[in-house]
Length: 336
Image (tube, rainbow, N blue to C red; front, side, top):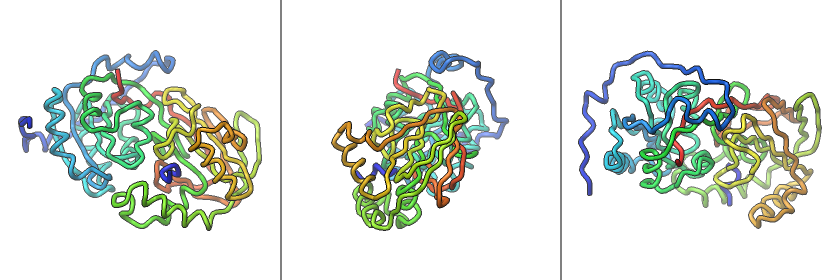
């Protein structure tokens, strides 16, 4: 999140399709194989039918439903149901309905926050997730190598391949992209409602500048593989994939590594954080002077004082906490 600073006429979706009966969610017993070997064990080809759910509160969500339906039908994907959900709190219930109905694939239109709200519904099931990146940062979509153009993203859903990827965890909360400690949660806690949808990244830039004035460094203790390290820090990036706020910051993080990566920007002053950002924007190796990186399946984080943690843009946890990875927990459509 902190990097956010910087005509075809298809058959209509029927009412019957919108009222599919509820069934039991199928869970998979995935083989204990290497990260790359497991990608195609259960899904060799893209499903050709799907349910479509679009978050109407995503930056470009509300106006995309009809266009997405047209493009999916043109690409050969039959929709069993299609809906826009304007209440973010209702997204999980909407996904529960279509998962229980036995859909082989569910296409989610929205940003990283939409995935955060629903990804636990897909985790450890055989249901394939298709991603339409309609948010501001789209970190998970970028990590998958998905194009951000709607038509091109739909071509991946229609003609790509199902791939198994990891999920990160903060405590017992699963997430697909990134989490952070530092300025990002401060922004997320205070940003005016609706600013993200209305102003996008420029709005975040202005708001973050105001919050930066209030920001202070903190003490961080990391326990990883039995080793404990304490340091002063200005930012902690908890990465399941390499993108943070839509910018590639944690190159060591991969969606299929089986590990979580914790990247720490060390320092005692705000200027240390600013210097790291500027070095990152300039693609300078100087950014590594203040960075320490830890990788493992389970890492314990403690700060003084206790601090909030933003997960894919939402403040949902606080320190102390254990972060980790759930290997191969999610099936998702990716480029072939």
